Length: 107
Image 1 (cartoon, rainbow, N blue to C red):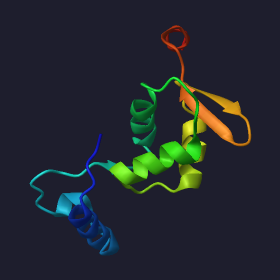
Image 2: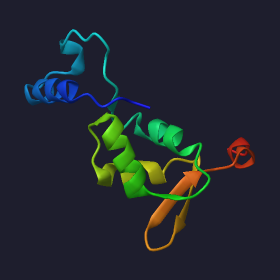
Image 3: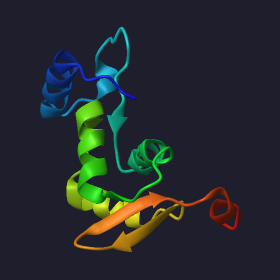
């Protein structure tokens, strides 16, 4: 699980505001930044120990709390629905959980 550090977030906001990247700062501990190419992996890690379905909004909120994210909720929703490791159920909202080992082996 990530660790929330407000000072890191301020530095990252400033860097991105100046069109720079996290590589333009000398970090003691480099922060984890969620992007389109890695957010599904972090979502998968958050979900893998859960047995029940979780709403997109809940998992996205958990990720936002623990990591610095450059992905909007709408992008996350699109990306996570394309992830073959996850299965979905529609109730009052769309919910997601990790497929079983058997289901994952079939991929």
